[in-house]
Image (cartoon, rainbow, N blue to C red; front, side, top):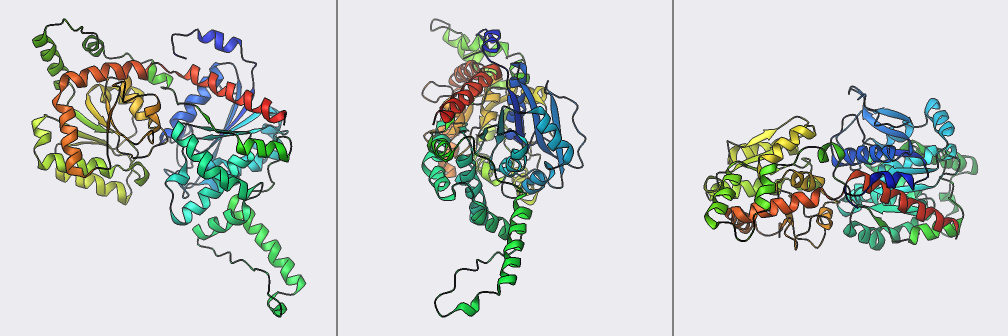
Length: 511
């Protein structure tokens, strides 16, 4: 459903819901696509007439934002660390913070019809608030399957909580077909093992990550009764272990089931729904580049020389070769830096009169090392080190000839769509849908350039150079990409989400 449809009709056919929306990242200190998407969904749901109560984390040092996006209430839990969505995220602080008496009372008074919660990091908070939600069903909004990229102790922790989220939710919603299939095939089986209470394995992993040890006591073998502590001491140890589980996970009570054990089993085995993120409203409202529309509308009879000159002028007006992703390992931004190094060494940047641009807000060792390498390879590179709003990003994309999305896996990759909305086509990994945005921006339709990003860097540099060499094809792809990016908006996304939620609740209740 596109912006061309009557959005008033959408609202008219929806009975308003009271929605408790729980997300680690929201309006204050937004640093990733998670915060952007959460904000967009909340804004669209509120615009459709639903009442929302948002509970999120926020960096303690940040100045709270004033925009309430039309929601009934927003509560932000101050946390001491930020800029992390992996196992190092402040999910423990977040879970503990939602037990504030004022928050608990406000949630109970709000009386939610449904709880929507983003990613595994919100599950402990969901559990802590569940006793005050009047049995409202929980919907797991999976913005990213962290089990696909986590390693070591982080993997143990995340896999346990992602599996538990699938087990306890009446519905799991993924951002792409690829993620939905992965959840069904690799995470749901673990949900069967963890069943209703994964705390044993999850708490152990969390404690290990925090530098604590939780060695299992085990059952003594025959003839080894002396290994078991005295009854009083054993009870004390069990009580201490339970307190440790609560301390680690921020879990005070288990989530009550939506209906029954059979209903939980139905929800766990249900194939996750797919809901493509929409181009956010504040970006959609920005005017599209007029000259691109002109280039895209040229007919086959247009004078070849004039068409070539127009395409060359379009390319010259867009000097940037951009990479706009979060500088963290899971986004694989080092691939862009390595590519620029290879292109600079071969004189390809100079040949195409191209300036590398990197959005480099992060300042940890990983990010700083990448920025140093980029400056060394291409001293004229532009590195933007401050947060950019929609208008600033749009201006950047209007000057981008080619956007490079470096991830071989990405739950979605909203910057691909946002760049396209301003006429900047993207190079994306040809991984059979492993980058979720290719469910919308389709390679066979000429809306993105699909290349094997896992190929050797020298080979990739030559492939990118071939894309850049054809200005006419670039301009045509830009026009198609822009049209596709603007075809799926926030109102349509919100309507589909509510439809999925209502369908799941109805089917689960019937079990």
